Image (cartoon, rainbow, N blue to C red):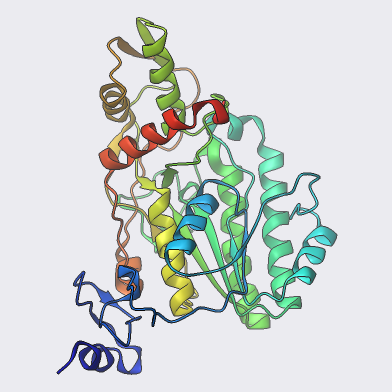
Length: 363
């Protein structure tokens, strides 16, 4: 039996089979070579996906990684930021309506959010609630009005209860109150998950929500330490301390909390997989590594990789935030055959390298 025949046999009725190259299960096989499309088949018979894809928040960290993934997977889409004059501000219904009216889109990816590091979250509770509710509800309304087939929404692990059992399961989402410093952002994003289920029930809108672990990677925000997330903030601190020969790097909190860090490139890969298969699921799906690391150990690892020779001082300033975070990703594995590819050390090396090459532009 030829590779093509084996591929077709495995793929009958959309059942998953094993790729000739990577050995993983897949819903999409090339008719000519028998390899899954994730292996970037070069035989030019890879299924061409409708290019009517609109990526909202397409100029942020995940969006820019997704642009690269689209190019590698022969996908075309329109990537939208807020615009120079805020003409694509999704908090404004009229601007959202105008945007959707410009594009005959069938697939929408919602990455847009008002978000920042822990100090930003503490300082901007009303903005976080208002902005993220408006963005989510306006996009849901526009998708219904313009007959969008599939909407994919990225959400946040900040929505989980403060003392959630490890690892976080999607069924735990509604089992307690969020950690205070992140609660306003987490509540807003959780409300949009529930809203998406309501729009599915009332209007038939196919919406899939992905709950993301703490993200990092190329195109992250390094420019403002007070608003940055922990990995870009630490990378910048250790790089500057090494260059200036400082004896000590001061870090917020105690370092005694844990996090699950997911490389942004791995998120773009699962979004591509969802688009290709027109994946649809009515409950949230965790995307993470299932591996937790304490912030003090993360700092030591970044210190090593940046070749900084001084000491680390956790000052206790600013809330630690949620005590522990680690996501159960068994649902993503079961439904989509997805698991992360980039371990933390590899991802940190790539991120530090990107930061050094793009230092002037970022700062």
